[in-house]
Each structure stands twice: as structure tokens, then as C-alpha cells.
Image (cartoon, rainbow, N blue to C red; front, side, top):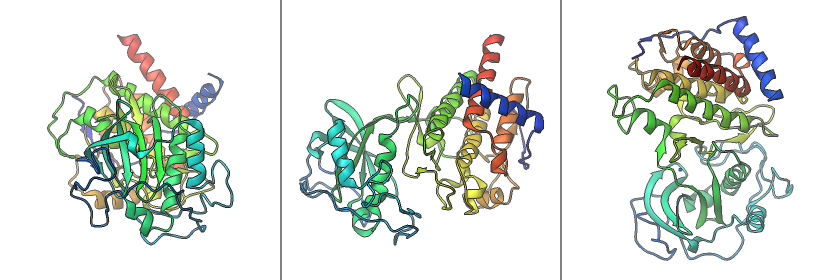
Length: 394
């Protein structure tokens, strides 16, 4: 087992590593019911729900109402919409600025529009700030359905825009390590549903089991280091794909519980509810404190390098096999304060001769200076060298 040592510094491994990273980047460029209606939108069977949740009403055949989004106007509930900043105005129906009616027409034309009656909802498998998630059946296959709370659309003036942004983001993705969108129901407020492949295991489950978040004792065996590095490589490849889109897409909430595993134990990066297309700079607090970049915690402008920081925390978690900050007794808020002040990072493992390059990569990727952090193209290049060394040793 790898022993751990405290890492209270986020210093860079130096110019030599940075130069190596640039060379890699250059080389790379040339090479997730008790169902709402048990399958029917007319059922009266209920499930414990938030006070603002209302069961689905009969299907409304009319088009979903469009909502103009005023740049920089914050919705009444800032937990849901944070600085939509002019996205999806119905006045400009471009691939990046379109309303739900346009998205619905596009979905029907391209064959990924799903009528609510086609979906048989089963047990609830998750719940977030904006939606329930159900296991369901669609055309004979198991799927996951994210059902937005109807009141989300009713009480939030930018609810339609937020939902349309998430759908558009998912519909653009086509990568083996990114969650696959199967279709959507676009008739809010009653039916704002996102249908994806059903994957029950997360990276967190695979690495730690189903125990408490900060349990010291493992409930599953620690996978071999080579397998853990393979998962790190797949995540990096998915993130490289997202960051190299035009415009760049930043995830903003990358963490093990948002990374799923398929039957073949390959990863799927998921939950684009917080994702946003990158403009000149963003300033909003979105994500999970333990994995959140210091500049995001400080509410400063940030770019795609905030995902690199989150990835570094995950990579260290994969290498150590332990939850971040397990060596401290800090709660999430104290962790955030210490990280924002540049004084805290998770404990690093002792170098056993196999992982020196991984440790250098981790330190570089969680540097407090975002400009120092490598791109995911550089990260995949570094991990490829590490994997090749594992193969040569075997």
C-alpha cells in the first residue's frame, strides 16, 4: 500500500516538466419511480418529493413557451441559474443560441425526440437541486431519465434557457468516454426530460465501494495501479475532446460521482448541468468544494483550466485509492477556505519509483496559478508514457 505524506504546497515541479508538457502537446496535435406515473403521465401515485414538486399533468401538445434571457440577469433562485449571460435568446437562433421550440424541431428531424408515453418510469435513483433521476425502460432497453421539477420552469424565468443549454450541450457530444444522449422530451413544465444510457456504477463506487464518503476502511479491493491509470487516461481523453470543441466546453463539476462506468468498465463523463461553453471568462461558483479550483471558489474569472484542477484531485484519488483530504478533519467549507488561500491540497503518496511522473503531473495540474496547469492534450501524452512504462515492466 502506498504511504502518504502531507502536501500543503501547490508548487510547480519546475521548468523541465513544463517544457516536457509543451512537447507532449505538440506531439498530440500531429497524432446516469416509484414512478411519477408508472409509465403513464396520468397516475396519481406519489413519491416523497420536495415541497415545490408537482406530479406531471396530461401531455400538453402546445409548444413549450420560449423565454428571452437578459444578459447578466440572475434568476430569483441563484442555485439554479447563475449568470446565464445572454445564452439562448430566441432572437438569435444559431447553433449556440436557440430556444426549446427550435431544439424540439431539431430533435424530431434528427430522430432523438421522445414522446413521454414511450417511457416507462421505474424507481427513483437520484435527486438533485433541479431534477429527479429515474431508472426507466424505453423501447425495451434500460435508460436513465432526468425529470426536471415542473416548478423549476414555473418559478425561474430563465428555466427554459438553462434546460435548453443542457440539452444542446449533450446533443453535441459524440465520444466513447462521454455519456450518450438517447433523446429528450421537450414539453415543459410537465415534461422536461433527458434520456441517457443507464449506468449504475460510478468511478467513486468502483474505487471506494458504497461506503460513507470519508470512510477509511475500504468496502471493495483497491484495483491495480495500471487499471487506475487507465481510468485516468479515459477521463483525460473525454475532457480533451470537450475542451477542443469550438467553442471550448468546460464541465465545471468534474468529480468521481459524475463519472460513470459501463459494463466493460470504461468511463463515461456525465452531468453537464453545470457545463458551459467558454467565453472570454466566467465568474460563478459552480461545482463541489472538494474538487473545485481555487479561482472558482474565490469567484474570480476562470477558464477551462478549472477542469484540470478538478482532474488533478481525481488523479491523486486514483493513485492513492483514498478520498481527498482524508488525512484532515476538515469539512467541505474549511477545505474550500484553505484551498482558496493556496494553503491546502490533498496528501500525496510516497514515490515508490513507479509514480514520479504521475506526482509531477498532479502537482502541476493543481497549481494555484491556472496558467501553469497543462492542457488535457499534455495530460494524455504524459499518461501514455506512464502506461507504456507499465507495459515494459510487465
